[in-house]
Image 1 (cartoon, one colour):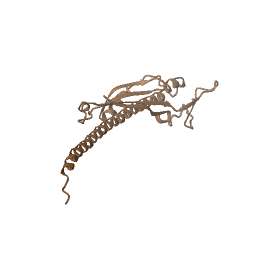
Image 2 (image 1 turned 180 degrees about the horizontal axis):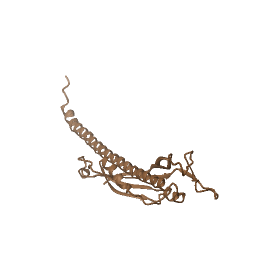
Image 3 (image 1 turned 90 degrees about the horizontal axis):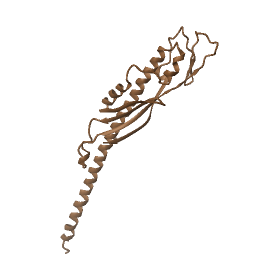
Image 4 (image 1 turned 30 degrees about the horizontal axis):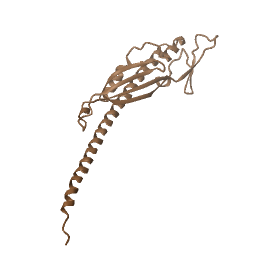
Amino acid sequence: MTRPRYGDAGQAFPIYITVVGGLLFLALVYFAVGQATVNRGGAQTAADAAALAAAQDAREQLAGKWVEAVLDPGKWQDIFDGDVQLAGDPCSRASQLAGQNDADVERCSSTGVPMGYDVVVQTRKPMGESIVPATAQKRSTASAKAVIEFRCEVKPLAEDAGDDVLPRLTCDGKNWDLKPDDLTELPEPEDLFDVHLADSEANDE
């Protein structure tokens, strides 16, 4: 009978331990990477929501300014260009939306051309304990930009147009023939302005 080769089994056991240890280490690494990815994803969601909220708030205010000045077409262009003072700060709305996504706004500012809002947020929760101790207290930051674009065309008035005539607005193919004595139907903010994300970026700090 052939005797068991205990020597070979004893040599294989350390190799087995090494392989299992390596697999466990890789699993922990993948878990740490997953934690970071989830945290960055949360930061980006918060940044996108905050930037859109600021731009949408500004859109509502711009539309309100236009309604106030609808009988004075000379003021329209400044409003459509965003070149007016807004009563409220749209960045306060950005902070609200970031908070709802468990993040804080670090920076929020209006942009020039195209008009919109740049927002940077940081997550409130760190990535947590992982195989890399230094990352335990790291928080993810993300930036996003939302753009506000005027989506209509304004037909200039003829030189001989009377005071009872307003310029025609054409918004995405729909004509708005405004009458000074009947302003019951006016374009909604979303008819006048489009809001969308322009670019974004997430990282860890």
